[in-house]
Length: 493
Image 1: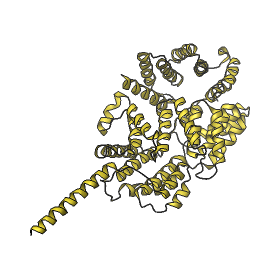
Image 2 (image 1 turned 180 degrees about the vertical axis):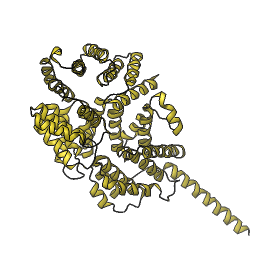
Image 3 (image 1 turned 30 degrees about the vertical axis):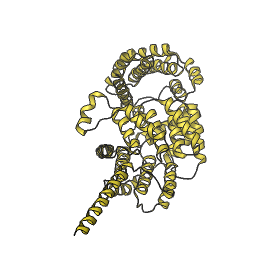
Image 4 (image 1 turned 90 degrees about the vertical axis):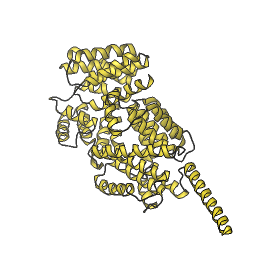
């Protein structure tokens, strides 16, 4: 009996040590890929999704599920393929409902990631309620990981993006976040993303892409976003996802020539998921350059091949616009009529196209050319075109206001801030209560200039004024930018 008691005590001690070691291993565990899954992951980031599905036909490990889930989400976000949506949604639900050991941080990380991925997918396909639920699930799981496994670094990628998104919501909407029991911080989110991207972590490149996207599309730091994206392309110059996102950011930053270079490099990398939206972006660049026949060709290719509904109304409208600007009014009116019954009005671009199509007359040719030259970064051409226009010759009050606004945008882009401020203020004062976007965007830009000049109180006034306009073509976009700016101001106090 004594020998048995001694043996039992020793056995209990060994078991206790094993439990302790297992516990320490769980705390110290960090996300990693084996060689085969790492190869598949790199294929995903290069948008070679078919190759991924061939390499991992039936995912087993949590890392394999992560890779295939990311491939499916990116495919849906880029193609908007409605035929694949239901199939991929079923796979998402099966992953979400997997009976796994949720004391494993890898498994919890997968749940947080697929929740966040599908929040974006649901929003892309117009399922706002499902998107909100999926975002909340991602947030709750992320918080659980950070509480139970504080040393698990991979979650910083997920929580960083969530912090930036949630932290961008202005203070007066915090009651909604309170109902959902969510809170975020832009500064904290950026720090978390940076902690991954500046390391040798397996998810570092993906985190770097997300950092650039948040800077450009959420925080409106376009130049910083482009610098970070260009740095990534120095490391992986042929990466299709980085080339695609870089072109999108370049257009947003009025760098259409740079965008065209990146889109050309993207077209040279023919293997992988077809990115027909890239042809839409090419159409945008050629419209900016006044190469209207090339723009028409690019827009038509996008319209004929894209499986989604977003941007098709805008692409059809702009095809007609290119004909109009090129002097072909008959084909222009034919395309305008077709655009009225094409696509849907979810994106800002499609909403603006619908609003433009509702006007009695097509847009003023000279003003439209000034607009697109400026948008593309062709400032010399924009200035020359503006010199051919006199305000007295403009036929409508809207055209007269737009002319002042276009001159304000050109002055702002060329860093003539005093002229820009005066012209923006004139735009606001002459717009009255008309439902045009010129005044609210002028307020937004005045806010940005005030921030640049460290006049934070005045900046806040301008951002609030931008939000005060009730109806205009770019309300969602301008409001989102103003709210994000206000949130950043709040965080600095």
